[in-house]
Image (cartoon, rainbow, N blue to C red; front, side):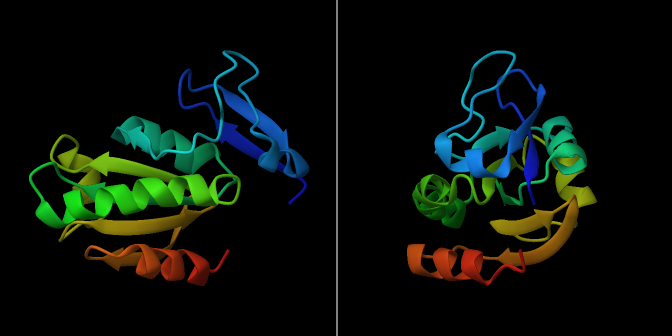
Length: 144
């Protein structure tokens, strides 16, 4: 794809970015915030809907909860992966405790659950905590 549409994590503005610029740390045209932070985005259900409806970069969402031990143990692994895949994938987190309707809408039955989306559609799902190697392998296996 020659160009991508990215939603700014700070101001929610829609930005058009040429594909060759994705690896150059593009910034929002409106507020100048980095469009591809090296940490996962913290989403609410509205922000998730906006990303799914408008972004062209594949999105992987970690559905988690603060009381979940496996979620807590996987959090640093997921955060590290966000820096490694910036420009290829966007990684985000959604707290299922705070956003129960979104968790229900996506059929989250156990946490952590990772869902990969491409062009707003689910393309893969993985439940259970993953090690760094397992997460890397799963991300590489995605049909992008």
